[in-house]
Image (cartoon, rainbow, N blue to C red; front, side):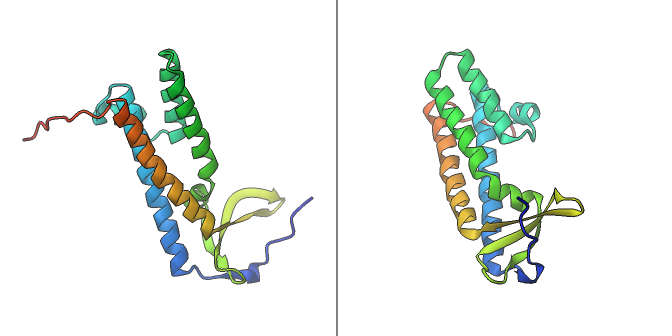
Length: 171
């Protein structure tokens, strides 16, 4: 069944609240992506320079897959499970962040300003592209999830003894 056309007359300008939530979302997920990168690099025994060269801007789920393979190779079933669970949860919770990062925000629903509307470059029917909407409450949930899992990634690294003070060479 094809969804009815999106009511274009139900789009209002973006609210300040929506802007703030989307900004918080992008910043929280950027911090999470950095924590994942640090965890993976440290797990492979790499400093930030080597880690950033090797991992670069690879997608965080891909980095987590590499980390899972490392723990599998070493027979660490507990860490394999933790990384597998983290990777699956990351994929699940990233939908709102992906809309914000990869779609054109066209405003909010006039009938419900708590829903942000996006034009997504994805075909729905011939000659029409997708219109998606995301409730701000879902974005706020994704922010909380990202922040808590940033802490989790850093805790896993710390528990494993991966953070070692490094003497700066420019001192």
